[in-house]
Image (cartoon, rainbow, N blue to C red):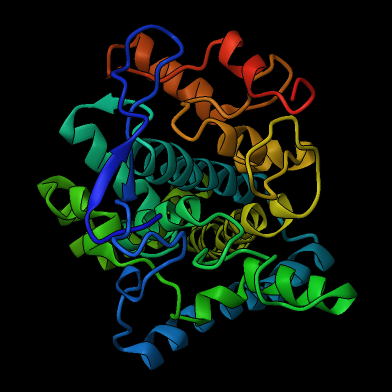
Length: 341
């Protein structure tokens, strides 16, 4: 059931290793229907401009692959290009996984305002949209996972058979970015962030962080490679190539991780764990684990499940920079195991 004002669920305080902190969700609807209401949806504004910018950031990185091909053909790819890619990819990906997702969407831990703003700025440089919109859409995804109202489910209203599956995967991967009929209403799903002065500032200055995310690889390339050409190839690899890889890894969580892989926990949706994607996604592709325990700071719940984001959070905790880190006890994990059920 859905309603008009946010409330918290899983409200037990973070005491011990098996408690969770709250995740924003809509309150019950007075109509008693477990379906999204029209006031769940953010009214579209500047829709044509938004589609143009989204299309540009989708197509432009692919054009950069032509330059990459020329580099490889002419043996012009240098080690410093890959170093720049690795640094900028790591920083911006962790900004999304640790910042936008685990810290802000699900409140998996708490931290100082300055660090919260820094990690949110890192995520903004990934160019996946302003932080408040990103968080609101993801919270709405959890509220209606793989049901009507989910902004990017591959399983809703796409038809049957192979054609329906392909249409659903395309919609969940990238098609939903060009549609605005299920975008989350920010004042409902992310009012806590609208009221947070640090996050509101990062949100307002989104274009600045986009620029920083492009200037930084140019400067890194120049500094490491020692030439203007190295700066330009640094921009290519830390800019366009990084955007291409990071965006499609993120999109794959929405599409592939709701279609392929293992489902160790019963979650009421089609979320799956996709092991091969875990290293590139910094642990985000343990997606069934995440849907089973949304507020958990770790998505990799087994020792062998690679989760770089969880390791970073643990390191920050040991340094005293984050606290109230949400962990899920083995007893709670066993209680929700699909094998047990």
